[in-house]
Length: 417
Image 1 (cartoon, helix red, strand yellow):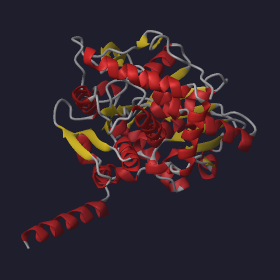
Image 2: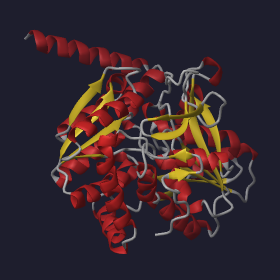
Image 3: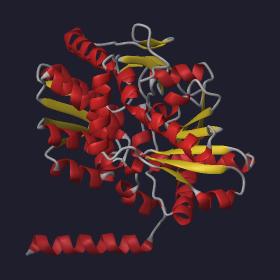
Image 4: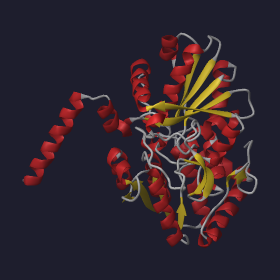
């Protein structure tokens, strides 16, 4: 497996590192040792590929979006279909890889944070397959807006712990998971879901997610005999973006990461870190990167219609790539995302997750200015069925409102009798 960017003592330029309580250092050192052993072992990568193919359904397809291409009448549009990966998103790539590490370390329990719930479902699935105890931390707000995923996590045997502190979203779930890890590190591995946190997590998560870009590069060359001109991916913590970008980093391909602009940058109710001056360099949750924080270093509240993008920090590797102008960062508002989702559904019969739809929304801004012989690749990092409550609310569906009201009334009647 090719590796284009590796950290220097855990740092990508000025970003990264491992800022940890002393009690956790031996546990992280053990993780580093095992990770670097398997990273340099071709047999491990083959073992990983085998489980991804036989259990997770990889490789995922690269779909030519013929109707969207006709609609815009400019470049050709291709979609990498991570929504068809097991559990409905790219998250299984990282989780199953870390599960193999857990087996090597002899740990019996895993914990994880989740925002959109996809990482939580993937972790609970991995725990069920490998026979591990599992606890998932999830912000109370995200529990409410991602009920379908909460249901499946619990059916898979995981304990789902709603986090009621702070903004009750993803950053607070990470804080609680870190507290748990400190208390139970002898038996427990923290399955961090994105390319953030202390070293070696950013490198390790990117290593497993790079499978997306390896497949996409081979597929686009097979289908078109040329590399794409632009690749779009949404950016929360950064794992799906780094996954598809990784193998294209040495190529002359423009890479665009799309953040959540929420209600707009001017409102302050957004999760934009790398395409704004709002964010500043800081240290939190074990690593150094750009965070949305006030002048006292206190983390600000964020907002996005997509729970998985509602995060205050960002991968140190993406911060490095942005600083070095290798990745361009843009953003999309909730309103743009809703409009883009309707267009994708109508034209292609695809229902991307709200997170993924941010990538489509920005691509739809740039595609009209492109040429016929150019190619755009969009990473559909997850499927949208988990978002049905949020999407129906955003689209103001009267039929859905009536359905929910009827189900509530039926539930009240059952409680009475």
